[in-house]
Image (cartoon, rainbow, N blue to C red; front, side, top):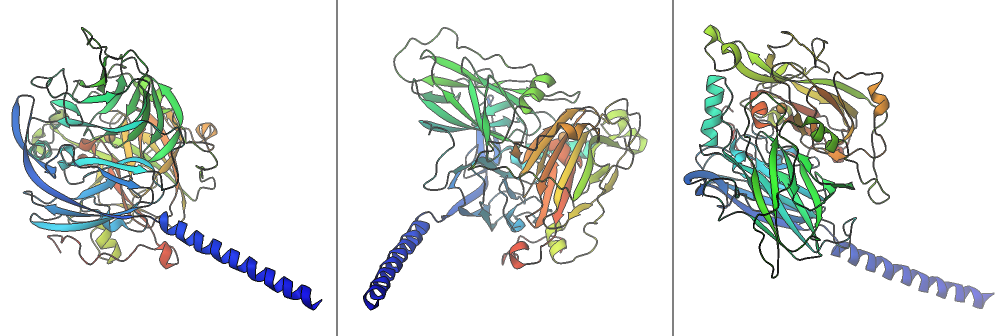
Amino acid sequence: MFMSSQLALKNMGLILRFLGSLLVLDSILHCMVQAKVQYYDFVLKETNFTRLCSTKSMLTVNDSFPGPTIRVNKGDTVYVNVHNKGKYGVTIHWHGVKQPRNPWSDGPENVTQCPIPPNTSFTQEIIFSDEEGTLWWHAHSDWSRATVHGAIVILPAPWTTYPFPKPYGEQTLVLGEWFKGDVMAIIDEALATGGDPNTSDAFTINGQPGDLYDCSNGSTYRLLVNYGKTYLLRIINAVMNEEQFFGIANHKLTVVGMDGAYTKPIVTNYIMITPGQTMDVLVTANQSPSLYYIVSTPFADTTAPFDNTTTTAILQYQGKYTAPSSIPFPTLPSYNDKAAADNYTKLLRSLANKSHPVKVPVNITQRIFMTVSVNQLYCPNASCSGPDGNRLAASLNNISFQTPTIDVLQAYYGHLSKVFSNDFPKQPPYFFNFTGDVGNNTLYPSLGTKVLTVNYNDAVEIVYQGTNVGAAENHPMHLHGYSFYVVGLGSGNFNNITDPKSYNLVDPPLVNTIGVPKNGWATIRFIANNPGVWFMHCHLERHASWGMDTVLVVKNGSTRETSIRPPPKYMPPCSKT
Ligand SMILES: [Cu+2]
């Protein structure tokens, strides 16, 4: 009896020691996989660039166009010290990074901070959480993002891997744009006259317009590949005002991710990608070794002016072969092929497997119906350059957003009055045939700095209803601080009885930007579990400039861990405070 309990104690000791060493091993492993902290310096300054036969000075980060890539593993934290050596105040936004509890570093001008004055610096803390794949960063002041943007590559956490065979290589392709003029002057002039802003003069792939433009074919971007290998292309649409169709001659694209989340693989000849979106695409170099055109062309189902040119890069196999007399060119949908755009968007699905589960809210506690419109403002003596001498405007629920001079976040956190009002409506002022002959219904919107407030952990549903007020077109709606599930997309007026029956609550795509179909609707859902002040806007820059924006305020929860963090020691000053 005595012996056996001694033995039992001894055994217990051994077991405890074994468990103890397991715990030590576990904490060592835990340390090894712990998220990293990285530091970047971004120097904003004017730099000379030459494209399309002419040279201009433009604002860039670290003298590069596109700007530097931020590379992290899932869950890392990055401090970016932004030094503004430019001529005017600017802010930087980390597009698609949720920044849990930390709106202070999100960046939209006069929404979460005032601009960083010239000759000063502002350190932003970018907190990665569940994002994995590709995102991007861009300036969020006026139109400075045309030249101030770059990729964010989020690799799987250490000791984990992609949900597809590891690609042999990877490359980021930033779809951008070239304006011969000064972009800030272009938007300033458009806002002064009330007319449409000038369109761009070229699209670009990794900063290069490509062979179809003047003075460009020596510098066309080339993607070198080895025969038989598979590459991960991280495609970012940084274009200001046009969605894009993208494809590669003779090569299938397999879409595996979007907006920093994985998707079920889609095998396709083309993608449609809106400004603000990113798509991760696998391409296998399985054709005869040669050269093949990579092409991006606009999708613009609108009567508004747009850049109708085509940018190219070249997929170039390595090794010895005779160059083709003409490089194969992909067939992409035509610029106004709405069906091609909508058909592609409807294919997107979350990966939705055991390691990448889907958590679509089902019991909705906040229902919002939001019309998305291009409008007009009355202009005395018909002296503006918009339709009928009016001024072009845009709105959400007929409110054209007026950007305040003190940022909404500071006003909300510090209880400052008269900066914004809490009464963004949960539905439009009138219900009419939004997508038909709308007459003069809501042609003239109200102006206001109205924010939409929801409670912590609300299950939010927003139905975006595109309208035929002004000019109808696809609107890529973007929300800061969140990714959301797109549970439904459709054409015409949303029907709240029949359309919800078509919702995908099983594997809807998880994105931060969704193109609301022209004269159609899109329904999104998310849990409001990130307290803060988050900008929501159309990612077509001219619409955002005209007021197609609002702010989502998500209140604090009941604990410190569910509340906005205190502000950093330094925030850029607002000139009016
Ligand atoms: Cu829009």
